[in-house]
Image (tube, rainbow, N blue to C red; front, side, top):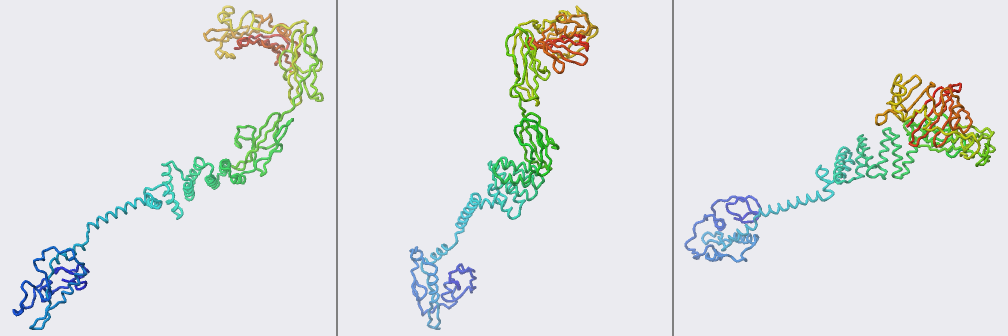
Length: 627
């Protein structure tokens, strides 16, 4: 049947038109005329009159049909027509009618379908059916392409990476830095911190550093009051990443000042200037710190002792030191009064202090070097003389107008010092034999000149005696050679024994006490005991060179070398001084001590002491071995 709406052919049993999709009208299963025949329903009309013969083998009227014998033959390709052509043909067929002779009725002519037309219609219908399998394949391909493109977009493009970062998915550090900055701009500081921290972790895996991003992260920490984390980032940046960039220094300085750590801020300002060369840090520091102290005495060389005063322009406390290692102000001296500078080199450092703020250091070096006098002049030329001579001394020509000069001299062989004789203008009497005159001039500042040295030889007796040596023993008892067994066999056990300490010999020495004095023995490496000291104050022994208890000072001195030097202002008198040893008389409470020292070839010393009473007689003799 044909659809009354779009004239598309539909199967008689169909309820919906395959062309327009509308409901087909319902009809009786029987009908009349050509349409009923075409629709496959029986004709309701009476059979045709016998007087109206029909052509044998033909059906219908007014239209020619192909022979039935050719209906099963395959039609040629020109027999396939489009749907619109079929529809026009059906409309023409449905309009054909035959008139009956008897009742003058218009009877539709039942057309005879052309051979192969049914197959052509089915083929056309098949061609217009949807191929759902192809649709599904195409849709799957399109879906795959879409998914692949989406993955490439997300993984390979900046916008795609940012989409993943916003979703919290795997994305690059750059995307997380950008998304964090977006959150920061919209006020989502906590979210920005989380993204920045993740971005920093991703950079760390690749050993990369985003300086700008870290500065943003630190500023976020500051905005939420987490100053410690912000400081950690700033310190890391200016210490390990970009020491020459100013941003991290500036931000850290701001935090230090805002948190009351201005002293630390000042130190960082100095460091920032040294590393970046940015003078703004110096200006900022100068505005913050107190001014350095001012000194009343400029640094330099002076030939007299001085006083120096310190002042603070802003009335701050002042601390100073002359030590290069002292830390100011903690280890300095608080300034309260002018500072006295004696002779020497004084390197002064001083700072002003206001609370925790410390100024830059004032440094000044003062060289207080008083002039030294010229060496004295000996008016007797060095040489050999037949008779004893007196040598006069005078100050050098440069000091002839200086009344405050003292000349110290010696003829015992030692170098003059403050305990040497002072030249009084009378001339120095030279002893017989060889002697050396030494003299120095000392001015009012205590400065000593170079030493004058003159050698003389006087061929006139008496000649000086020999110096004290190891051969000079008491009663033949030799130090460092006599054993305890030998001494005990000769002089007995003694009254008591005690352990004592001896210079250079340790504290395991045995001191044996006797009624006349004591002896001390030390243990050597083989545990042998040797004599190291012998003391006696009774006339049971003779001292070296026949000296004895009760002798006078002159009686002792006359037995040993004496160059005839006079006493010093202290009363001490040098007897001799040479490569073998020395001899000197010392003034002590209640008497004097005559001491001789001999230097052995193996660098040991032998010491011989005579103690004299206030009456000037010997009251004890002590001989000691000093390793």
